[in-house]
Length: 151
Image (cartoon, rainbow, N blue to C red; front, top):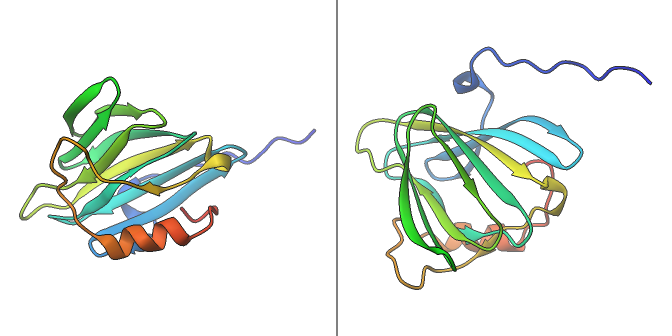
């Protein structure tokens, strides 16, 4: 059995990115079996609208700037400030969104979907807390798209 190649990225803020929605871009750095690792660049006032995953953990690591992760689940509601070096593990079934509250600075975060082979993006609304983003067009296209390695 041969060794798989070592994957290295000297600066995740320079990974080639593709638009996800206005002001939010994603670059997939590595996919191996059930796990995908990607970097997101989020412009001021943008992010990923409210959604949940039925079987997938979202693992977030702050790279640059400040992001707010708002969440709502059976164990409670909250807002986590994801700073460089910070970590957040969002379990399946928890409604969440990622938002850049800055008016001037972009932000970057690393995302790991585990297991990515069962990735789903289920658009939802918060029941008790206010959403920062209201982007029905993005939510509708994500809901209709089949899971693939480009997410």
